[in-house]
Amino acid sequence: MRVVGENIEPGIYNIREALNIAEGKGLDLVEISPTANPPVCKVIDYKKFLYELKKKQKEMKAKTAKIIVKEIRLGPNTDEHDFNFKLNHAIKFLKEGAKVKVDVFFKGRSIIYKEQGELILLKFAQLLVEVGKIEQLPRLEGKRMIMIITPKK
Image (cartoon, one colour):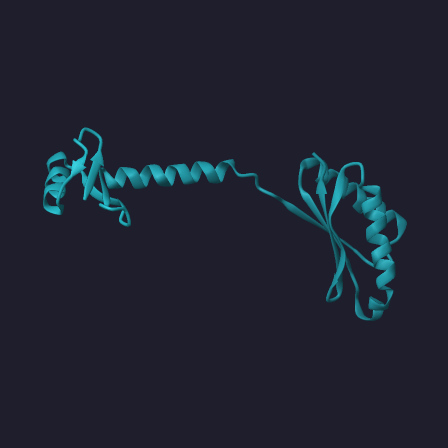
């Protein structure tokens, strides 16, 4: 097997010699590439390696953008004042960088007003065209018609 590491003469050793080298340095022998010919092993402090790996993963997770989805619920017969009130909330959410999920909930027999629900969602999207764009057009899922709007950069 090929042995590599810091302060070690890289070369090809048998398992017993490689373990003795690692033990002599007070480190661990870790198999890096078992499919290579000959297999590659590295002499490292394994606990320190795991600690640094976990630290890197934590940093990567912290750097990723967290997408927030805010939900606004309308009815098929939402009046003008309530519509404008919820529109202002959507504008605020989009300016903060959150996605907005707008849904029209149909109660009982109001499901027969599907067209009216779709018109409300499209009107909502039309008024938000300056601050957001439609990611997903209105679609019916059970008793809800859902549309997703993302903020413009």
